[in-house]
Image 1 (spheres, rainbow, N blue to C red):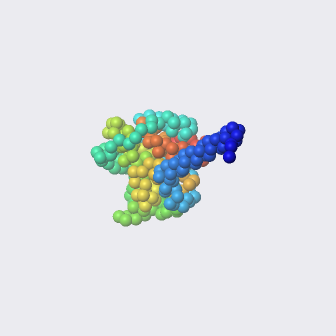
Image 2 (image 1 turned 60 degrees about the vertical axis):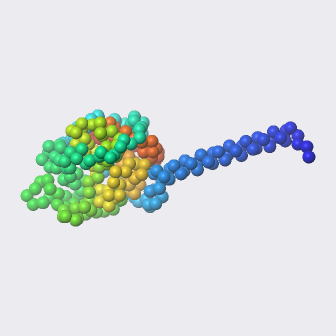
Image 3 (image 1 turned 45 degrees about the horizontal axis):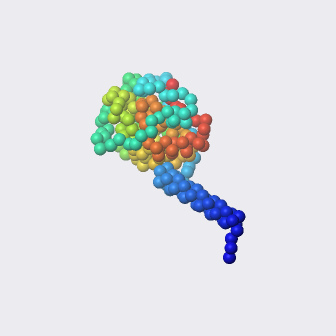
Length: 265
């Protein structure tokens, strides 16, 4: 059977189109796999829930500001993200919590330690232990990571139910620039109200030192604030992001293009 030149060209063109389609599908499959093994795996594994869309940052009536290394850039969180350096993680084998100073110091010199400052800032109906204006005894919170209503009661075990989370985990910070900070600057990073949120204890333990590529709050409403707060902290302390972390942050901000950076001012 003979084939005309025109028929041959049509068949060849269809073949090229088929191969192009296969190439597009292959790229899409690889992109989907990359998403799943970064941010997607926990998103698929856990049902999304609703809850608060933001958390308190600063109360100037009784807190004093902690001075960061750089001012938080004003404006778009997406623009601030683009201003962060993108690099791989530094080694973590020399990480020690003590590199960020003693836990829960009174860094702002307002007379109360940082942990009690954050509990007072984030809880409602706060009660103090008898004779103290600092030591928080009780309170309630609509917790931002899970969306659950929780009660705080001070005690050897009950205190663990609400913990203070470092929005940018100190272990993550150590691998992304904090080793280059001075001890004083690392102490500020660990105690800056911008980087601290009262959170559900189990959720905080689950997060550990993960970044946005591998952990996000179950509460969908809070993710834009959470990512913007991480970006703001990293900008304020000269920390960088990994490629996967940046892509995960961009995906979150795609749902809230008007999200602004967050600061204590």
